[in-house]
Image (cartoon, rainbow, N blue to C red; front, side, top):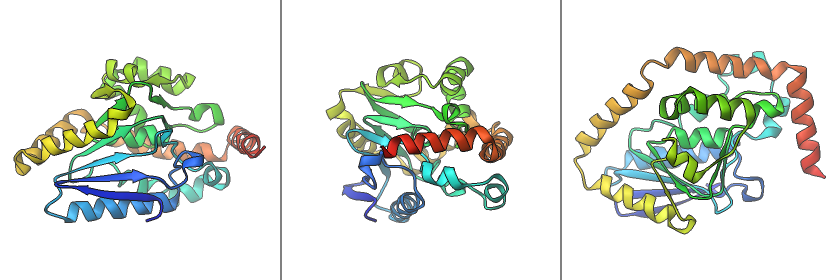
Length: 251
């Protein structure tokens, strides 16, 4: 649990990622396990009606731990259901609001997209840089961006690595709200409290139709993405680029 901090605010549970703030809160196995444990506990508590997920001031989350990507191989990834734990972080039984300050990168961006909504700092930085290091987004982010903002925006982000500000994320429909940085967590908590005041069965059914409308047709492409994200692990480009990135970061 040292990777996260959990605070209960009446009917809202605030889960803050603090695992490796100097490295941007990567989604290591330990981080994923801690998040799943906190989310499972919140969902088992009838007093909890919503969750807020945040990171630090500098980083929401930078996604997969590249030290893991560097050594992972394709066949083992497919047979071992690689990223299955990451999938369990999204589309929870209770509403989750992502409160994003700083950088939401790669799988960290995809983690935010898998929440019910994003509250972004105006100067937050959203990006999918995977193709620059020889891999691809593998946690359903491209498809969710298509559903929210259209194929053109998804293509720009995935193929060029362009960075969206929090304001641009709101303007494209990726974020529900963009606010000053110091208002991000308070705003997300206020949203959670507002949800908690409403009918729990109505919220559950409304979420079901909202998710189904935006993602109901994507089951096969989610599977295809997982397979392709695994296959690219064995390419020479991936081994060279990820290795070079890690070596440069160690200097």
